[in-house]
Length: 239
Ligand SMILES: O=C(O)c1cc(=O)[nH]c(=O)n1[C@@H]1O[C@H](COP(=O)(O)O)[C@@H](O)[C@H]1O
Image (cartoon, rainbow, N blue to C red; front, top):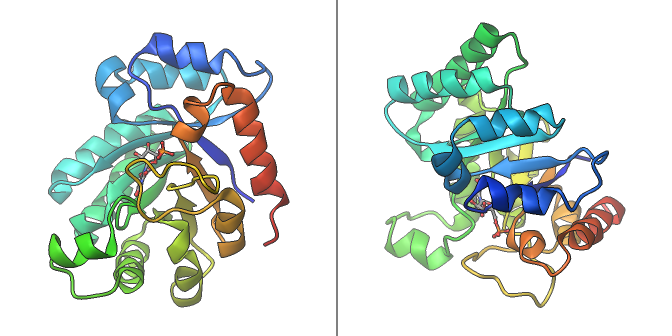
Protein backbone atom coordinates (compact mmCIF):
# COMPACT_ATOMS: atom_id res chain seq x y z
CA UNK A 1 0.00 0.00 0.00
CA UNK A 2 1.32 3.42 -0.99
CA UNK A 3 1.15 6.71 0.85
CA UNK A 4 -1.62 9.16 1.57
CA UNK A 5 -0.07 12.28 0.09
CA UNK A 6 -1.07 15.58 1.70
CA UNK A 7 -1.42 18.29 -0.90
CA UNK A 8 0.03 21.42 0.72
CA UNK A 9 -1.85 23.88 -1.45
CA UNK A 10 -1.11 27.05 0.47
CA UNK A 11 0.48 30.31 -0.67
CA UNK A 12 3.44 30.97 1.61
CA UNK A 13 6.18 29.22 3.55
CA UNK A 14 4.61 30.59 6.73
CA UNK A 15 1.23 28.99 5.95
CA UNK A 16 2.97 25.74 5.03
CA UNK A 17 4.91 25.44 8.28
CA UNK A 18 1.94 26.57 10.34
CA UNK A 19 0.20 23.51 8.97
CA UNK A 20 3.09 21.05 9.11
CA UNK A 21 4.19 22.06 12.59
CA UNK A 22 0.88 20.73 13.92
CA UNK A 23 2.08 17.19 13.07
CA UNK A 24 4.33 15.18 15.36
CA UNK A 25 7.93 15.98 14.37
CA UNK A 26 8.70 12.25 14.20
CA UNK A 27 5.95 11.54 11.70
CA UNK A 28 7.40 11.17 8.20
CA UNK A 29 4.91 12.52 5.70
CA UNK A 30 4.61 12.47 1.95
CA UNK A 31 3.59 15.96 0.90
CA UNK A 32 2.74 17.49 -2.44
CA UNK A 33 4.14 20.86 -3.41
CA UNK A 34 2.25 22.37 -6.32
CA UNK A 35 2.53 25.41 -8.49
CA UNK A 36 1.13 27.88 -5.97
CA UNK A 37 3.87 27.17 -3.42
CA UNK A 38 6.65 26.57 -5.95
CA UNK A 39 6.01 29.75 -7.95
CA UNK A 40 5.92 31.75 -4.73
CA UNK A 41 8.78 30.22 -2.77
CA UNK A 42 10.93 28.47 -5.40
CA UNK A 43 12.98 25.28 -5.01
CA UNK A 44 14.30 26.21 -1.54
CA UNK A 45 11.00 25.15 0.03
CA UNK A 46 11.52 21.67 -1.46
CA UNK A 47 15.05 21.47 -0.08
CA UNK A 48 13.86 22.57 3.36
CA UNK A 49 11.13 19.93 3.46
CA UNK A 50 13.58 17.26 2.34
CA UNK A 51 15.90 18.27 5.18
CA UNK A 52 13.07 17.64 7.60
CA UNK A 53 12.86 14.10 6.27
CA UNK A 54 9.60 14.35 4.33
CA UNK A 55 9.02 12.68 0.97
CA UNK A 56 8.07 15.17 -1.71
CA UNK A 57 5.75 14.99 -4.65
CA UNK A 58 6.63 18.05 -6.77
CA UNK A 59 3.59 18.59 -8.96
CA UNK A 60 4.33 21.11 -11.70
CA UNK A 61 2.53 19.30 -14.56
CA UNK A 62 4.99 20.07 -17.32
CA UNK A 63 3.48 20.25 -20.81
CA UNK A 64 5.68 21.73 -23.55
CA UNK A 65 7.86 20.64 -26.45
CA UNK A 66 10.08 17.65 -25.59
CA UNK A 67 13.37 19.55 -25.37
CA UNK A 68 11.96 22.19 -23.02
CA UNK A 69 10.40 19.54 -20.78
CA UNK A 70 13.59 17.45 -20.72
CA UNK A 71 15.65 20.44 -19.58
CA UNK A 72 13.06 21.44 -16.97
CA UNK A 73 12.95 17.88 -15.68
CA UNK A 74 16.73 17.79 -15.41
CA UNK A 75 16.45 20.63 -12.89
CA UNK A 76 13.65 18.86 -11.01
CA UNK A 77 15.66 15.62 -11.06
CA UNK A 78 18.47 17.32 -9.15
CA UNK A 79 16.22 18.13 -6.21
CA UNK A 80 15.75 14.57 -4.98
CA UNK A 81 11.95 14.50 -4.89
CA UNK A 82 10.04 11.19 -4.96
CA UNK A 83 7.38 11.98 -7.57
CA UNK A 84 6.82 14.59 -10.24
CA UNK A 85 4.32 15.19 -13.07
CA UNK A 86 3.84 15.87 -16.77
CA UNK A 87 0.62 15.99 -18.80
CA UNK A 88 0.24 12.79 -20.82
CA UNK A 89 -1.32 14.89 -23.60
CA UNK A 90 2.17 16.27 -24.30
CA UNK A 91 2.83 13.03 -26.18
CA UNK A 92 5.13 10.02 -26.14
CA UNK A 93 8.30 11.87 -27.14
CA UNK A 94 7.75 14.50 -24.46
CA UNK A 95 7.18 11.86 -21.77
CA UNK A 96 10.26 9.88 -22.83
CA UNK A 97 12.45 12.99 -22.73
CA UNK A 98 10.95 14.04 -19.39
CA UNK A 99 12.07 10.69 -18.01
CA UNK A 100 15.55 11.10 -19.49
CA UNK A 101 15.84 14.59 -18.00
CA UNK A 102 14.84 13.30 -14.57
CA UNK A 103 17.37 10.47 -14.69
CA UNK A 104 20.18 12.77 -15.85
CA UNK A 105 19.33 15.37 -13.20
CA UNK A 106 19.34 12.72 -10.48
CA UNK A 107 22.72 11.49 -11.72
CA UNK A 108 24.12 15.05 -11.69
CA UNK A 109 23.15 15.40 -8.03
CA UNK A 110 23.78 11.82 -6.89
CA UNK A 111 20.18 11.32 -5.74
CA UNK A 112 17.53 8.71 -6.58
CA UNK A 113 15.49 9.61 -9.69
CA UNK A 114 11.93 10.81 -9.11
CA UNK A 115 9.07 8.67 -10.34
CA UNK A 116 7.45 10.25 -13.34
CA UNK A 117 3.65 10.41 -13.18
CA UNK A 118 1.62 11.44 -16.23
CA UNK A 119 -1.64 13.27 -15.63
CA UNK A 120 -4.34 11.68 -17.81
CA UNK A 121 -7.63 13.59 -17.77
CA UNK A 122 -7.76 15.97 -14.80
CA UNK A 123 -10.21 14.89 -12.10
CA UNK A 124 -12.05 18.20 -12.64
CA UNK A 125 -13.00 17.21 -16.21
CA UNK A 126 -16.53 15.83 -16.67
CA UNK A 127 -17.69 13.43 -19.40
CA UNK A 128 -19.45 16.40 -20.97
CA UNK A 129 -16.29 18.54 -20.90
CA UNK A 130 -14.31 15.75 -22.52
CA UNK A 131 -16.85 15.55 -25.33
CA UNK A 132 -17.71 19.22 -25.85
CA UNK A 133 -14.51 21.08 -24.96
CA UNK A 134 -11.82 18.58 -25.92
CA UNK A 135 -13.87 17.15 -28.81
CA UNK A 136 -12.82 13.69 -27.66
CA UNK A 137 -15.00 10.95 -29.12
CA UNK A 138 -13.95 8.30 -26.58
CA UNK A 139 -15.81 7.81 -23.29
CA UNK A 140 -13.81 8.96 -20.24
CA UNK A 141 -12.56 5.52 -19.17
CA UNK A 142 -11.34 4.66 -22.68
CA UNK A 143 -9.60 8.01 -23.07
CA UNK A 144 -7.86 7.51 -19.72
CA UNK A 145 -6.83 3.96 -20.67
CA UNK A 146 -5.46 5.23 -23.99
CA UNK A 147 -3.41 8.00 -22.33
CA UNK A 148 -2.16 5.57 -19.70
CA UNK A 149 -0.99 3.10 -22.35
CA UNK A 150 0.84 5.93 -24.08
CA UNK A 151 2.47 7.03 -20.81
CA UNK A 152 3.54 3.50 -19.93
CA UNK A 153 5.03 2.82 -23.36
CA UNK A 154 6.90 6.13 -23.23
CA UNK A 155 8.57 5.22 -19.93
CA UNK A 156 6.50 6.91 -17.22
CA UNK A 157 6.27 5.15 -13.85
CA UNK A 158 2.57 5.75 -13.38
CA UNK A 159 -0.36 8.05 -13.96
CA UNK A 160 -2.51 10.47 -12.05
CA UNK A 161 -6.16 9.75 -12.59
CA UNK A 162 -9.50 9.54 -10.86
CA UNK A 163 -10.00 6.46 -8.64
CA UNK A 164 -13.07 5.75 -10.78
CA UNK A 165 -10.91 4.66 -13.73
CA UNK A 166 -8.44 2.48 -11.82
CA UNK A 167 -10.29 -0.85 -12.21
CA UNK A 168 -10.28 -0.44 -16.04
CA UNK A 169 -6.62 0.59 -15.93
CA UNK A 170 -5.55 -2.41 -13.87
CA UNK A 171 -7.38 -4.69 -16.24
CA UNK A 172 -6.27 -3.11 -19.49
CA UNK A 173 -2.87 -1.58 -18.75
CA UNK A 174 -1.68 -3.83 -15.92
CA UNK A 175 -0.79 -3.75 -12.26
CA UNK A 176 2.92 -3.09 -12.83
CA UNK A 177 2.26 0.65 -12.99
CA UNK A 178 1.44 3.30 -10.37
CA UNK A 179 -2.09 4.65 -10.11
CA UNK A 180 -2.03 7.80 -8.01
CA UNK A 181 -5.45 9.28 -7.38
CA UNK A 182 -6.57 12.76 -6.33
CA UNK A 183 -10.26 13.71 -6.36
CA UNK A 184 -10.71 12.15 -2.93
CA UNK A 185 -13.68 13.28 -0.88
CA UNK A 186 -15.33 11.78 2.20
CA UNK A 187 -18.91 10.80 1.46
CA UNK A 188 -21.30 13.73 1.58
CA UNK A 189 -18.51 16.34 1.50
CA UNK A 190 -18.37 19.19 -1.01
CA UNK A 191 -16.67 18.22 -4.28
CA UNK A 192 -15.34 21.78 -4.74
CA UNK A 193 -14.03 21.94 -8.32
CA UNK A 194 -13.51 18.17 -8.56
CA UNK A 195 -15.80 16.09 -10.79
CA UNK A 196 -14.69 12.44 -10.74
CA UNK A 197 -14.40 11.75 -7.01
CA UNK A 198 -14.36 8.79 -4.60
CA UNK A 199 -13.88 8.21 -0.89
CA UNK A 200 -10.54 6.88 0.45
CA UNK A 201 -12.00 3.39 0.92
CA UNK A 202 -13.55 3.35 -2.56
CA UNK A 203 -10.19 4.39 -4.01
CA UNK A 204 -8.47 1.59 -2.08
CA UNK A 205 -11.09 -0.90 -3.19
CA UNK A 206 -10.64 0.21 -6.83
CA UNK A 207 -6.89 -0.40 -6.64
CA UNK A 208 -5.32 3.05 -6.20
CA UNK A 209 -1.66 2.88 -5.20
CA UNK A 210 -1.60 6.27 -3.49
CA UNK A 211 -4.07 8.99 -2.55
CA UNK A 212 -3.66 12.75 -2.92
CA UNK A 213 -5.80 14.79 -0.53
CA UNK A 214 -5.71 18.56 -0.19
CA UNK A 215 -8.61 20.66 1.05
CA UNK A 216 -10.36 17.97 3.11
CA UNK A 217 -7.18 17.92 5.25
CA UNK A 218 -5.66 21.38 5.03
CA UNK A 219 -8.96 23.21 5.46
CA UNK A 220 -10.21 20.95 8.27
CA UNK A 221 -10.59 22.47 11.73
CA UNK A 222 -8.01 19.90 12.89
CA UNK A 223 -5.81 18.90 9.92
CA UNK A 224 -3.84 16.30 11.92
CA UNK A 225 -6.89 14.39 13.01
CA UNK A 226 -8.45 14.68 9.52
CA UNK A 227 -5.23 13.19 8.06
CA UNK A 228 -5.26 10.31 10.56
CA UNK A 229 -8.92 9.62 9.93
CA UNK A 230 -8.37 9.36 6.14
CA UNK A 231 -5.16 7.38 6.67
CA UNK A 232 -6.99 4.87 8.81
CA UNK A 233 -9.77 4.55 6.24
CA UNK A 234 -7.17 4.11 3.46
CA UNK A 235 -5.15 1.53 5.38
CA UNK A 236 -8.09 -0.49 6.68
CA UNK A 237 -10.18 -0.57 3.49
CA UNK A 238 -11.05 -3.83 1.86
CA UNK A 239 -8.89 -4.31 -1.22
O1 LIG B 1 -1.67 16.12 -10.50
C1 LIG B 1 -2.41 16.22 -9.51
O2 LIG B 1 -1.98 16.04 -8.39
C2 LIG B 1 -3.85 16.42 -9.75
C3 LIG B 1 -4.36 15.88 -10.92
C4 LIG B 1 -5.76 15.84 -11.12
O3 LIG B 1 -6.25 15.31 -12.11
N1 LIG B 1 -6.55 16.36 -10.15
C5 LIG B 1 -6.06 16.94 -9.02
O4 LIG B 1 -6.86 17.37 -8.17
N2 LIG B 1 -4.70 17.02 -8.82
C6 LIG B 1 -4.15 17.73 -7.66
O5 LIG B 1 -4.57 17.09 -6.46
C7 LIG B 1 -4.89 18.06 -5.44
C8 LIG B 1 -6.31 17.82 -5.00
O6 LIG B 1 -6.67 18.73 -4.03
P1 LIG B 1 -8.08 18.69 -3.28
O7 LIG B 1 -9.16 18.74 -4.34
O8 LIG B 1 -8.04 19.92 -2.45
O9 LIG B 1 -8.10 17.40 -2.49
C9 LIG B 1 -4.64 19.43 -6.05
O10 LIG B 1 -3.38 19.89 -5.62
C10 LIG B 1 -4.59 19.20 -7.55
O11 LIG B 1 -3.66 20.04 -8.18
